Amino acid sequence: MNAYRNLTENINKFLTEKYEKDDAGNKIFSNLQSILHFEKACIFYINEDKLTPIYTYNFSTDETDAINIKGLLQYSLNETLFVNNCPFAKLLITDDTPYTEEENNIFKTCSFITANIIKEIELKDIMKMQVKALQDGIVEINGFNKIIKEQNKKILEADKVKNKFLSNVSHELRSPLNSIIGFSDMLISEAFGNLNEKQKEYVKDIQIAGIHLLGMVNEILDISKIESHAVKMNYSTFDMNLCLTEVLNILKPLYLKKQIAINNRILPDTLIMADYQKLQQIFFNIVSNAIKFTSEGGKIEITAKSTKKYITVHIKDNGIGIASKHHKKIFKKFEQINPSSTEGMNSTGLGLTITKELVKMHNGTIKVESELTKGATFSIKLPIKSIVA
Ligand SMILES: Nc1ncnc2c1ncn2[C@@H]1O[C@H](COP(=O)(O)OP(=O)(O)O)[C@@H](O)[C@H]1O
Ligand SMILES: [Mg+2]
Image (cartoon, rainbow, N blue to C red; front, side, top):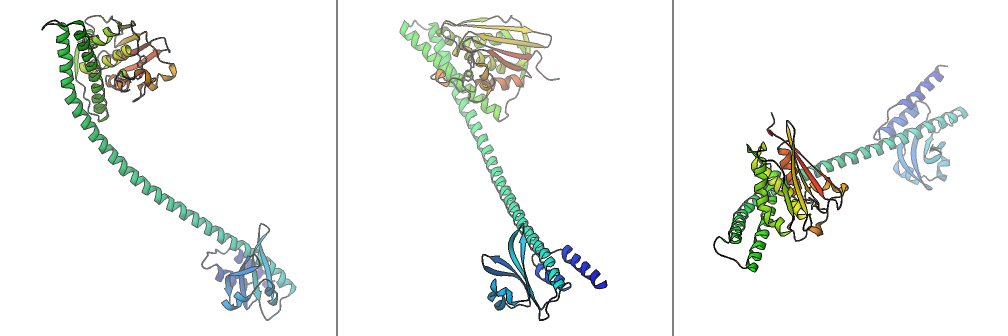
């Protein structure tokens, strides 16, 4: 009875012991010895018909190397170890004292336990390798992240340099362009002598080209300022009608050339507190688009509606229009719906992006209502007092 209790306890210990790869051989054999007597023991992997020793007890390497499947029979007991019905190893024990039938059965149970112990160790090993691979992967990802961060920093620095360069260059370009436009105006007015028709036409063309170029230079200057967060608001209270009239005067040569009628119906003395130059830029961008995308002989109408707190300016044209699926896209940088139609029209695809930003800076909103071929209405809603309380 006592011997039996010992046996169950020892089998239990064999079963529940913690085995690590390095000490598994010793532990397996020492547990086995508390259950069965043997002089020598070995566990082999089966590799086709070859046996490769994994753990040995009292066997010399020469001996185990010499053992093949058939050779197992010369020793006392051997059992095949299975996992999921697959034979993968052999357990061998041998002793001068022969084994009883009962011991033989106990050996079968021990083989079953050994099979599970070995598979568990293998599984742990695979898991360890996978964890290691994962950790290596993480280290690698962290390495990449570091590189990406460094590159981002460089890109940001390069961007700053680019923005600074652009704002310098644009500045240098604006003054001569203003001279070209201004002096063309003087020539066209014939204040200093008459021009013949051809001369007048050419000077007008020079002026129009100058206006286009000024628009582009302004857009590049504005976007670089916005992107480098260098835009400061300069609020004052002024007449919106006057602000728009000035813009329309600059654009006059463009819309006259296309025989487009512009009707400014904003009432005189419509006061607003805003940034004068930025509002001019907003009007310039939207009206110049309306001119650009309206055919000869078209119409542009500018109206305003006020509530207590807001004024909304509607700039409506009867030009080519914009399909509703493009309404969001056109406010994104460099997006042009039909770039070929604006070819040769000095387009940067930046105008609406800038306009939206400038409107936002006033705590306002901009939206478009349009259908393809049915003209477009851009509506700009601004707080009459734009400064946030
Ligand atoms: N009034 C309009 N009518 C039709 N399409 C317009 C109008 N205004 C803007 N768009 C479309 O939105 C695009 C983006 O406008 P914008 O940012 O000002 O760039 P750009 O004028 O340089 O092309 C234009 O290329 C055009 O496709
Ligand atoms: Mg534009």
